Image 1 (cartoon, rainbow, N blue to C red):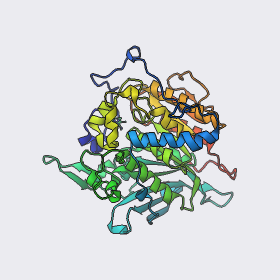
Image 2: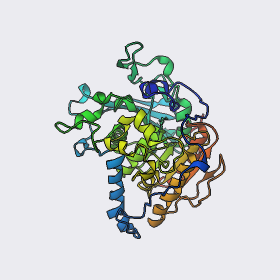
Image 3: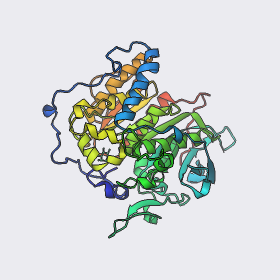
Image 4: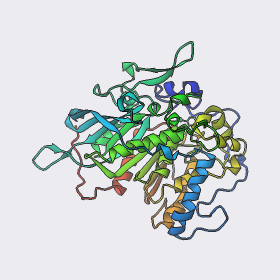
Length: 451
Ligand code: GCU
């Protein structure tokens, strides 16, 4: 999304409106490679006590849990055990002839409490491709599904009148009060470029999305509307210590969508892929780190506190994140403001938690705020864990030229031209990568009907 220079107070509303933005350089931040102070990258294959990790067993039993804890304690906070809830869902709409007969569209309410309909819930929108059957038209099929949260409501991802608009959070003009309102009809399809639903369906993949505000509004001081309220211990305040923040809550929401998708007969539960852009890329990374049902990750410009390196003091800093978006993180994250080079949980460790699953890390050349080279170096470093687990990671330590992909191994990377955004270029590469790694188990991979 394009809101990086906007305050958190308006981010949730404005992010989905602009179509392009210039490269952003906020004054007072470093964008000069030569001015990066010396720093040491964290080692994904070294235990906190300094011992090297040399076997897969040591990774799974010791180092991986240690890294998860580092992120819980220092960045995103801990997802409460109480938040493990049973699936409660209702399919509220199905259209088996969506997208001119090429897809099934489903809209599903996922309830967060036993109150069901009358309690808090998330609306999941799902498109699933219909596959050609020899001489018998188009039929059902268990599809791989790409799952991600959206910024502006489900109606923004495609101009499809069948999508029921999601109530969105916005600040009332004048009073500044947070309101939960029906979006204007003009918002339909405003994020279609970023989601490329038709392209995804045309390549034989499903797409599932929900509005992140259904889980927590993306505003300072809005935590009373967050699912986090549902799982507080007596006397606990949401932001203290290692209590989870909004990114933790959004990641939890992705897992609730996985709960549902795993039960849907039109979905292949073994091929659920998480995706997200920017803050929602951080969310997808953290969701996959915690939830191993997620089979692959496509992470677009998740930047600092995501796939990039805070220790490399380039672009955004912890201080900026902590100042503008403190509610995204746990309270302890503030400790690292002004101490980026000492942060004990950085992007390369986050990506290593996704191993050995296929991972695509995407940057944009104009997105220096996220530090594309830092994103690349994280992918290189995490590749060592892939190698330990018998996979081929990125397979190169040389950053590919702009608009070239490194896609030989289980970790892929590109830096495309342009600004902070998700584009058709990103999706083309993502779908090529999934074709390489998530082939259908039955070997029935077919192209689906195109217009
Ligand atoms: C801000 C923030 C980034 C974030 C981005 C986004 O720019 O500083 O860390 O990734 O918003 O979510 O668009």
